[in-house]
Amino acid sequence: MNSVVIGVGNEFRRDDGVGPAVAREVARRGVPAEISDGDTVRLMETWEDASLVILVDAVRCSPGVDGRWHRTTLPVHGPVASSHGFGIPEAVELAEALGRLPGDLVIFAVEVTDVGFGLGLSPAVAAAVPDVVNAVLAEIRQTS
Image (cartoon, rainbow, N blue to C red):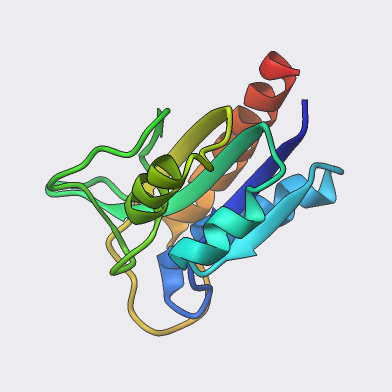
């Protein structure tokens, strides 16, 4: 199975960099991975030839628990929001309308609260990265 992990986020906005942190770690382990700013069209271009796409992104929940993460197969439309203005939900809707959705799309969303300017993840979010990496690698092994 042709898979790609896409870490969505901005590493200069503290915990919003959790997606790129996970992508870098899975790439270090030999898994194809990309970092994305979440732009709708670029997301679709990145997943174009993949049959399994795993997206990792920061989300804000109310109430939220920094570092708690969730696995879902499709984004929830409605009050759940990415830390980006546009991004995964819009990319999925557009890809669906254009018939360009990947065969399998799995999303790992990590709850965050600190998306202010700066480098580095908060301790709670940084502590979640190894577990999310392991879950992503297990997902790939399970579907291969």
